[in-house]
Image (cartoon, rainbow, N blue to C red):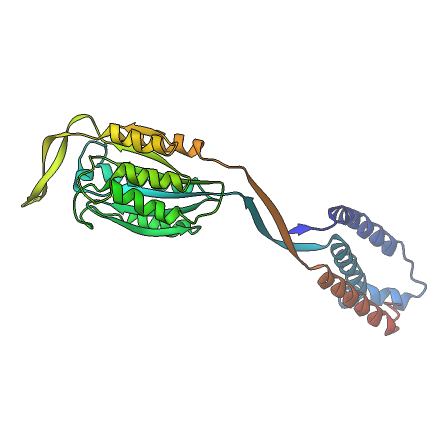
Length: 325
């Protein structure tokens, strides 16, 4: 709620002074006849005599509120931006269950960090591709970020054939960006292993992406050396063993370089968050936001009320009662 003419509301401060003056004026009234004075002092008569003054006071308040123009506004925004289109590519192979990203595994850390990244890209178009031994588009490019967030939360290791098909993942993402408009088209690729599946070579896919003016930021996630990796299903759930882990960092650097992007390494959850923050800073475009406010005015309601109260006062005085004349 706001006022179209806030200064008019200040006139309400004059109302108590008017009420005080009117009361003093009534007290100074002298009755020429004793019978009239006696009737005025009776409680019902005194109450009736005050009604017109009360109506006048309320009419004055309603009139001032009408001049102040109380209103309720609804804000709409028009966003002007050249826009960035980003496809998030997330590895969901079995190795993403490795317990080297406290307080949980790699996939949990990746999902939490990607979700935070999405919440910071309010004006960008986003898409999601998941991959393991094959690549699958989870969400096409969209401005509905809530759908993307829900898809990220629903990523599960084991939902695709196991393996690490980096080439097909890049190709699937680039295909989604091929016809995208805007200033910049970006793939953020997160993986924890070496390319070992798929018929498309990662470098070939990266070069094709570069032809579509797509930039790739590659992230290698996971500790170096050994990590607790799931080795099978036991009677009480997954069984883990410390196994050597390796990320093909040379390949990821070449993939990123082929498109003008960068490669990052994240060995823990905090480092992974920092990587996404750095990418967030690198891929920014100015956004112009215009705000429009549509108001619903209530001044006429108060004006009609003021008129009704004034009419009521006139009707009471027109009865020609000696007490009201």
